[in-house]
Image (cartoon, rainbow, N blue to C red; front, side):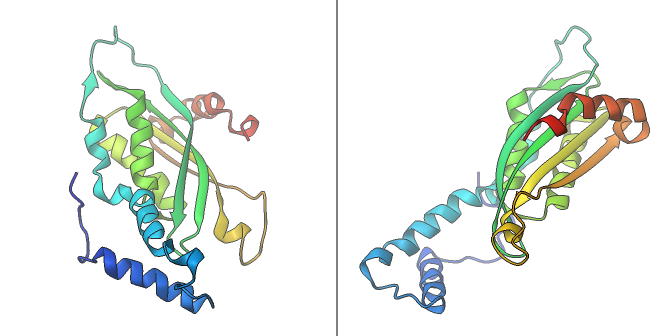
Length: 199
């Protein structure tokens, strides 16, 4: 897919030179043998880590299935592992997303829910925004009776710098439709994901 909303064209050469500048700023010599290929490797890594900017996550939800024998109960996909990067410090975020929805007359392939999570995660993020983006995308495209997203993640900007607090995770949730309006539906979803027993 073509990259969308790219603010400006940056050449690969300019990106690699930016890496060399950071290496020099850190006190290194980009010309030494061990670092000669580092700028190219970093740019390749960025192409993978931030591939979500080239993807419209809604496209993953375009193909649905209506032959479900009238199934209209909760669909939950839990423990979707993801990696992202904090937009404030460019440090890694490692976490798990739990996604649920109440279908109306159609369902989507479960791998597509995981792809939606990955597409948004492979961008610079804050966890609150990531949680909302996933929920609103599913809600907008599938038009279900409700959507629930819970994310549990560890932020390396907190564990490897600053306060250096290891083992701390952050939990965010976004509930839409029936999950927001009906406490029993919300409680059922939270039982399904059983977040306390998954570490």
